[in-house]
Image 1 (cartoon, helix red, strand yellow):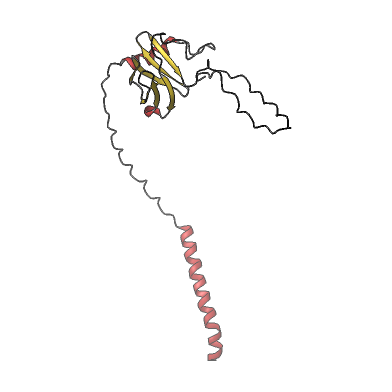
Image 2 (image 1 turned 90 degrees about the vertical axis):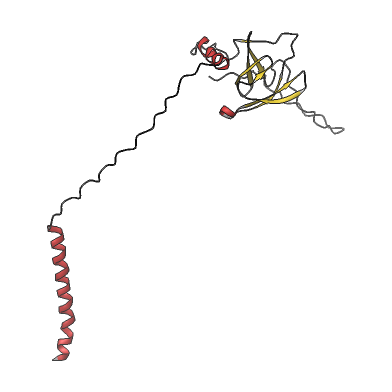
Length: 190
């Protein structure tokens, strides 16, 4: 008798556990709980407002804004060099060696022909009787009392150097040189 009771006791215990678990599931599914209240929204911190006084425009800024106002922005014939003047023959024209474009930290490296010295200039720096107004990727614009002066990085009036001559071997005819397309001067931003 003890042997038969030992066989069915674990089955009865498992059956009771299954009934208890089933009762717990039924109770969880039939009972309704209220929703938790929404989280309270914190007041955002006030944004500090700084009032900046208006300062008068300097000569460099005035020249920059005058350029914008004088041109028709929608004209197909608009060019970046329409209001520029050339240096007089008696003046020595500065030579532009290169530019570094980096937003407000842009620099133009210009050689003063009189002193034969290359210096870096930022926007607004005095140079050649005027001030540096704009630094573009292929030119700089200097604002002078008689108007704007544009100095190109590569002068379009000078011919481009030809390709280097290929070494020739005696008895072998030279290869024909490849023709380069004519160079057009760079256009301003469209």
